[in-house]
Each structure stands twice: as C-alpha cells, then as structure tokens.
Length: 150
Image (cartoon, rainbow, N blue to C red; front, side, top):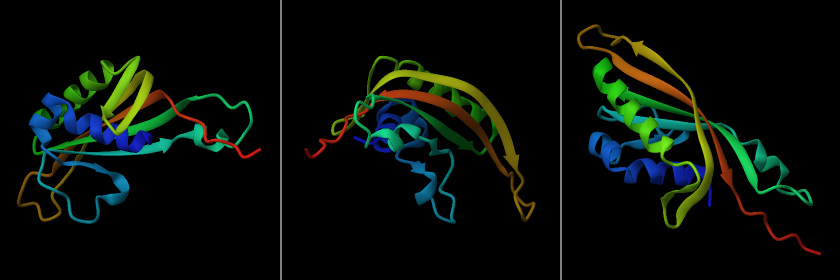
C-alpha cells in the first residue's frame, strides 16, 4: 500500500483529528484552486527516495519519507490545536500500522522535525486571513518489494 493512502486514512480515522476537520484532509496535488472550509489539512510527500530503489536486487524493505503536513485554521489557536492533534496521532504511530485496511503501512518511526507557523492575509482585507502550521516529518515505514521476473 502507498504511504500517501495510509497517511490520509490515518488522519481521517484518528478521532481527535477527525473531530476537528471531518473529511477535509487533502493531498497537495488534488486540492485545486479553491480552499475548503477551515479547519483542514493538506499534506504532501516531499521525498520518498526508497521508491527509486525498489527495482534493485537485495533492496531493503524500509524507507524514509520526508512529509509535510499543513494544518489550516481561521485563528492561530485553531491551526495550533489541529497541529498538536496531528502530532499526537503520529507520535503514537511508531512500530505499528497506520491507516485503515486496505490503506495501511507499517511505521517503524514517525519523527517530527519542526513546526513552521504561517499567516496569509485576506487579499481583500475584509476578513481574517488564513493561519497555518506546517509540520515537517520523517516517516520510516515498511514497504513490500515487487516480485522480480526470473
């Protein structure tokens, strides 16, 4: 299973995260131009270099992926609360499966690196802008190797 599907499934099914965002968890590539109702989460896999090695003989089955998770809110407290719940959900993901079947991967370690708070003003200046906290993670996970034709 893909790490992309597992992260999305994990966040959608974590009770405290889901309570805050409902089903508003998006991959950066599918978000589009219009932002959804806040709060919401946007994530992207920055680097999954293990994907490049799967074709090689004797390649390992553990991969490190660099992941960004952005937590958007109407207020700084809302984006920070959401970021804290995301962090707690992934902190408890070490040495276990994340996601829901069939969208699961086994995580060997989820390593939070930092939070980057950000604010984007409303372009018209009539409303509050958008607050977000961008989290940077390294997620070490197991993947299966494809069968090689002999």
